[in-house]
Length: 261
Length: 289
Image (cartoon, rainbow over all chains, first blue to last red; front, top):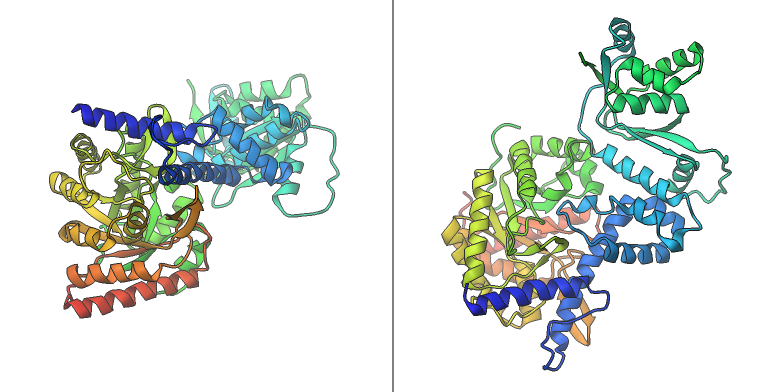
């Protein structure tokens, strides 16, 4: 590489990167030279393009967060997030993967403690939407397999199943704000366990009981059937266990049986 | 999805957008092919792939990558190249394209098509990147000229000469974006006609047409390639000029922002087709191989 080319490289790649990432608009002109308005205008286009593209990604991924906080706050949030977590992946649609954690410690949003979990729900929905395809098992087959080797059989959950739990009623909040309903939302104070799945073309969401949610979580972690249900039930009685099994069998979330021994 | 569909030289297509999926797949229309952004189909499954498989069974496809950073100074992201390769393997599109641009440097990634230096050093580097992509995909790719907003004084090689040399060294084809030529010419102050005439037409395997915006920053007027409106008259004239001289090429209407109805896109494609056929007749170019 000639000296000229090395300088061209540094100047162009580093200069444009710095100008895009800097909080305040900057230009590429030399310190000694007068500021070139044409260069500054060109840089502004790239800065705007990049910022607008990532704002659009956050809008698309977090429509409910956007509705909850409003356009102005959302733009502020996007700006702060961009500077705290500069994008690093060519999978642009995954930008925002750590927005829930960012929201958790984002002081200006401290008055809305449920935002973090609503954002987790929105991410889970999107990830379920793009998950791999698989066929779900009929309930009859599931029941039959349960009889076989509950100590060594584990069940494969559908690749689109996502499980989100929160001390806040996030599903009710999410559902209400997904549509443009102007009605006032009456919330229960309890938290919610949410199951998200896409058995075919459409993503479905539902709230479920704590034992069902815990059993699904254990199955997703690869635990055997018995281990999953023991961890889900704790000291609860057999009737509850039967309900959990019936519920999971009919949820359209199991795709295959895995023999762990 | 068996053999790859082949495009005729006078095929006119449109960029495929989700709000148009149903109408474009289920209603009759005259669109010859559809182009998709590769990165929108890099998930494992779900509705995007279900729709795309439906389109692939009825139409030729063009897969247009926007994030490979072929003009970057870093090594290509192998994981991303693998993702592109599996998409190409899955849908076997008629055309695969990327840009003479970069979007990644160091650990940062920018969702935009940024201008590389046009020097001998970047020629060697970009050629190696194009070779690597073509080898991994096992097929030719097309490289598109990006919209330019900055006049880089460091450049030694004019852009059309750079693209011609890149095609000659690597065997890649060129995707001539005529709106980008027009936008760059206006922003950087060169002749769009001279640019079109300087491109090696034999290497051009696809043409892009789009609308752009006129904006004002820092007291300067800048044309911004926003793909948000009709193809302007000047761009259509440049398109006719190319076709008159070089003959038709598969031509695509890009409309990504301020998305219109599918009917409007159909009309835009029909206008491009009509301009193409008129220019073919005027130039005596009837080749429709």
